[in-house]
Each structure stands twice: as structure tokens, then as C-alpha cells.
Length: 117
Image (cartoon, rainbow, N blue to C red):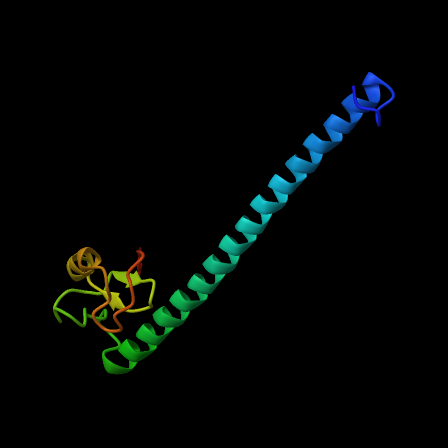
């Protein structure tokens, strides 16, 4: 037993405190990661909301009674929005996901969201 601990109980208490400090540090790291994830999701949500608003405003002015068409194939209705904010039909979105980059802005595609009208 170490000279700094006079009893086995003192050593045991110190060991428990060290384990708690490690546990608290681990929890703090997890909390920080979750906060960063929430921050990124809020930013992505804001971008998507702005993109949808822009699309709906533009399409309402051009053809108020029709759903917007894909800017690639010009025939299918827009169903997907990429992480960059650009929108496409399901078929074109799937092709572009395989290619890895948005054809309009060349941003790396990390995912897309379905648009419901």
C-alpha cells in the first residue's frame, strides 16, 4: 500500500473518485459530440427550409397550379432535396447520388431528403 494512503478505505475511496472522474470526462465528451451534431442538424434544417421556400416561391410564380419539375430531366416532379439545397426527381437524384456530386454546384452529396407536397 502507498505511503499517502493510511488505510485500505482511503485507497478505495481514491480509486472510486478516479473512476468517477474518468466517467465524467467520458460523459462530457459525449455531450459535446451530441451538441455539435444538434448544431449541424439545425444548420442543415435551416438550409433545407430556405431551399424549399425558394423553390415553392419560384414555382408558384411560374406555374401556380403545377408541381415543380426536375431541372435535369425536365419531366418528372421534384421529390428529393440534397444537402446542398438543390432539388431533383427521384430518378435523377439516385443517378447523382451514385456520381457523388451535385451537378449544379458540385458539392459532395452526403444525403437527400424526400419533399412532400
